[in-house]
Amino acid sequence: MTPAADGLLRPSDSDALRAELRGLAALSQLPVVFGGEVHAGTLVLSEFVGTRTNGMRGLAVAPSSGLGGSAVATGKPRSVADYRSASTITHHYDAPVLGEGLRAVVAVPVVLRGEARAVLYVANRDSGAIGDRIADEMVQAARRLATELAIRDEVDRRLRLSFARDALAPGNGVLASANAVVTEQLRDLHAELRGITQAVTDATARARLRDVTDKLARLVSGVAAPDDAVSLAPRELDVLAHVALGCTNIEAAQRLSVRPETVKSYLRSAMTKLGAHNRHEAVVRARRLGLLP
Image 1: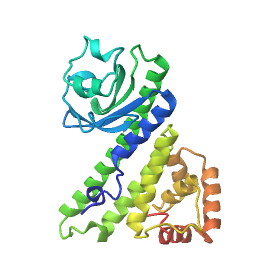
Image 2: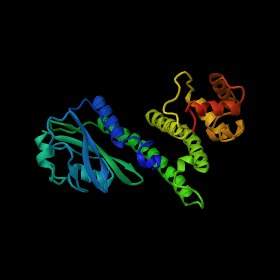
Image 3: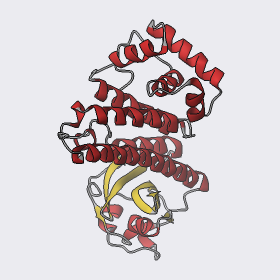
Image 4: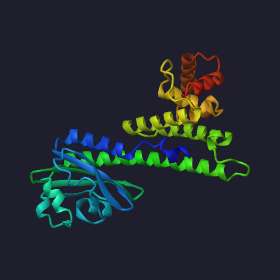
């Protein structure tokens, strides 16, 4: 079973959705915030903050139906000031929505490559338009979640390609974790993802991407958890990951968009923390500690 298949690398997407919804609940101060992921075009409501009933839990919203279905179909935010009397949406889901007492509702889709992957909602039990400030916060949350899902998709795609190439090569077995070729491919992927991290402007997405690379390092190295006695800064790990591929300081600097002197400084600091006398020894010790794949 590959890492992507058994879930060792990709965290639950519902956890990322839940985190954004909780953030929206704190920022908006509205009584109800909820959402769900889109599966094969159908939105399934699964995450709720502030609801009083279970009427909407697990509700499957078809494309173009209701407020959320319209957001999925159009890929654009939709809102109503009074759900009960709104003429711009279908009313397939009046029973659970009105049963929860919701009146003003905003739905914002999480769009990735032109396809809605999830929908975020905020709602009020009083009628009246929900302000632009809250709508803007929802759009930013949807963009953050889209970035997070894009990163996870790319990790899964590259892992599938790596394992597929190895499985099809003559004489290679399907146990890719024992294959030196795949190990090197995963190390290259790890370094590339560390480099991509620097281009991600959202701090939360950047932290999550680094978390994925840490899990990848532990998976390949076979170390369940890194030794807390040695802690490398993110930039030190970025440099060391490229040095581990055989990059010179200049090559690592080009990949990480920094100066060669900066790479040298981070490498020197990493070597000191690892008690290593040269770059090769630093890589070996980092791998033994589960800091590098």
